[in-house]
Image 1: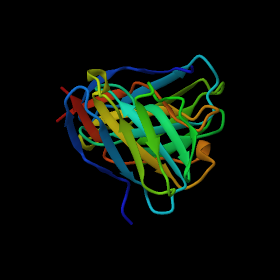
Image 2 (image 1 turned 90 degrees about the horizontal axis):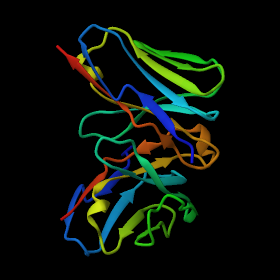
Image 3 (image 1 turned 135 degrees about the vertical axis):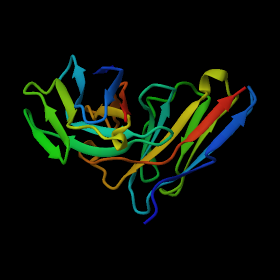
Length: 110
Length: 116
């Protein structure tokens, strides 16, 4: 089945530094959704990207969908301690389900 | 209104026991999903309901796993003869539409199952 690879697996940054996580697939992605899961919590929807080359911003977060729809990225500017958590990308594929990447666990050091 | 709720939040079962995990989706949500999340991994799809119809159960790992949603609202995931490899967090999610490819999913807090 389709696999969605996500890198890096872990990222430690100093508060105020930027952070980026990348999502890659060998096949064309349908729609990309991004979720955040706080330690001990559950995934919470952040955003959905649908169109090739799409860029969306939410305050300090910038989401991109690749031109070929095979990759996506999430960039956080000037991280804060509240950004701590695991960020997952997920592809909806052609089925009625989400295929999640393995996630990037972000630690922000104060 | 209230979000997705799941019970119990924690369950410890001895190997070979049967367990039942409950999910109460957001009221009015048509679509309901079950996922299994192992430690340090992303959620993995188990099964999908549209109202009371189970339209996809391709992710259920074995015939020991069974899910139902008889009245199109509350859902139960049952695992028979639990094995250690069943230890994971079981997440339930609901979505307000049937066109699930374009709508976000709302996740519950999960049930952490530990099989000893």
